[in-house]
Length: 201
Picture 1 (cartoon, rainbow, N blue to C red):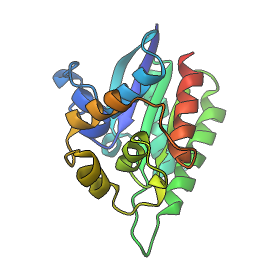
Picture 2: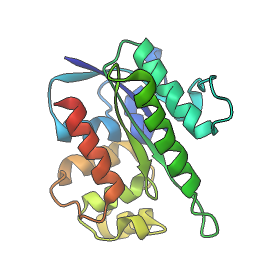
Picture 3: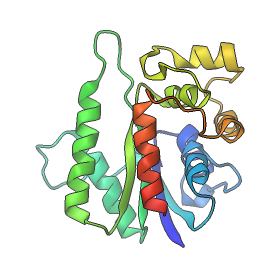
Picture 4: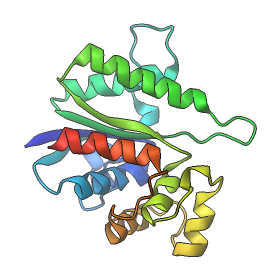
C-alpha cells in the first residue's frame, strides 16, 4: 500500500484534509484525491496533507524562488512523513498583463531539483494548473481550449451548472465525467495524470 501526501491551495484540492490532521474529514475528498482515484482506485492511501501557504520552505539554497523552495519543502515533508508519493497542484493564475509564467518555471525547477535531491524516496505527481484548477475541470468536461480561457469558472457555471468554489461539487463533477473526454490541448492536466499513473502503478 503506497502512502500518499497531498498538497494544494485549499479545500478544493485537499477536501477534508485541508484543516490539519486533527480535523481530517475522510469522507470529504478533494480534487487531488478524486483525480488519483480516477487513475487508480486501490493500492494507495492518503497519509498526510498540507496547504500550500503552510509549507515550511526549504532553507538550503535561499537564492531560489519561494515557489521552488515550497516544492522542495513539500517533498521533504512527504519524505519525513514516511510517504512514498507526493501529489500537488498549484494554480498558475496571473492577469492579462502578467500571465505568471515564472510560477510554472519555478515549480518545474522545484520538481526537477527534488527528484535530484530525493531520488526515488518520494515519487512526485506535481505541476501547475494552467490557468487554474477550474481550467482542468473545463477540460474534464470535454471542452477544447481550456488553458486559454481567462474565466473558466464562468464556462463551468453557465454551461455545466457547476457552482463556484464548491469543493464537494468539484469532486462530484470529476466523478461524473471521468477522464475519457479530456482534449489533447489540456497539456498541464495530461502531464499531471501521466505522472500519477507512473507513481501509482
